[in-house]
Amino acid sequence: MSFDVPDDRRYLESHEWTTTGDSVRIGISDFAQDELGDVVFVELPAEGDTVEQGAEFGVVESIKAVSDLVSPVSGTVVDVNEDLFDAPELLNEDPYGDGWMIEVEPSESEFDGLLSADAYREQIE
Amino acid sequence: MGLRKPPLRSVHADHASFTEFGGWEMPVEFDSIRTEHTAVRESAGIFDVSHMGEIRVAGPDATALMDRLTTNDVGALTVGDTQYACITTDEGVILDDTVVFRLPDAGSDPQYLFVPNAGHDAEMYARWIEYRDQWGLDATVHNATEEWAMLAVQGPEAPRLCADATDGATTDIDGFEAAFLDVAGVRCYASRTGYTGEDGFEFLVPWDDAETVWSAFDCQPCGLGARDTLRLEMGFLLSGEDFHPEDEPRTPYEAGIGWTVDLETEFVGRDALERVEREGVDERFRGIKLLERGVPRAGYEVVDGEGNHLGHLTSGTMSPTLGEPIGLGYLSEQTSPGTQVRVLVRGEPKQANVVTPPFIDT
Image 1 (cartoon, helix red, strand yellow):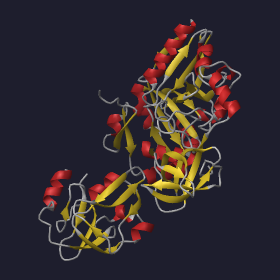
Image 2 (cartoon, chains in turn yellow, orange; image 1 turned 60 degrees about the horizontal axis):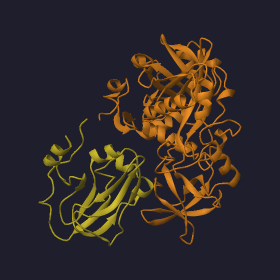
Image 3 (cartoon, rainbow over the protein chains, first blue to last red; image 1 turned 90 degrees about the horizontal axis):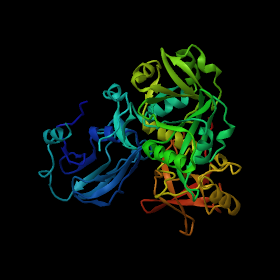
Image 4 (cartoon, helix red, strand yellow; image 1 turned 45 degrees about the vertical axis):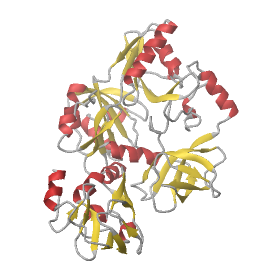
């Protein structure tokens, strides 16, 4: 099975993705949603909270598993995808689009330490 | 030690993801737990449950041996009957739960087959041998776990599917009864039992013929993931999770299956259980429904409005049928159904209602 890994994102080994720029969106990869199976619950920080690169920022639960979410960047949360609270299945259906989790204003550009799409693809192959 | 593999392992290989369960490598998910779960509730699904053990007991004293090692009244069984029972320690603690089949007699001797849970077959085989020898009973005990595959066909359409696959032979089998019959030319032992709350059959199939029988049913293949959510909605106990001799030692009375205990019979654990029956239990197996967002999971603590400990959960999930978070666990005896409690989800108290399973009507 091959998984979608968009080239315009950066990734963590723990399967979170981030866009790059002054304001970034964060979510989990296609591979991650497939591994989890039917997602039924998401716990996310609130607008105004801070997240830290490499630290937990929330939890995602499927019917069979509980998984911590790790932030690819440090910064302030400026938007939260509240649609996921009522429709967590969006994470399965569209992990890179409607299934985005939070939007963060990074405190500094720190994308260099993250995996490129190619490097992440290699990891999940 | 390598994992034991069901005979259908290679058949499943390209269609399922796998998990370790009780020392076996079993399919956990074919399509998605929700898809598989819904198929069983609304139409039908087929499960490979070949990880279940099979121990055959026969001989002049087979009935006595079975009766003295299980909590229920084995003497009441006639050929073709099946019976749910517990296997308990001297203290009345559940070692495992099992289904006992009374097979056709072997010559003039009664013959039984019982089904321990995954990974318990060797232990139960040894237990039966040990007590047989200690009591000087005349019976043979044979561990047939790797001679029989077990397939379950469950769901409202399962009776029709099973009748079609057996030339109508299953239509004569009532609930909790069983008989030998042919599926696609393979001699199987079919019982009208299951672990989903739906109608259907479980087939004991000769190991090497498993694929023929599996292929005879055109319905949704289901993994252990859906098996777990289906049994959870019914409040059925899972051995090793909802009871465990060391980690979750429980008597049948605490576990809500006191009806499997027949104190009129003699069995290991009887005297202890008579005492428990007389004196009552401190904690009882209950269901909870979370009223807030979250998913109850095994190990979560349950407290009252003031934060006082009431018990803990042993199983939990998001119910695919209800779309509501449900859990099972042991709560103090006073915590009756209807009580509002709090479940600590990662330390956060979330409101929940105590209920009596099943969570759904089937």
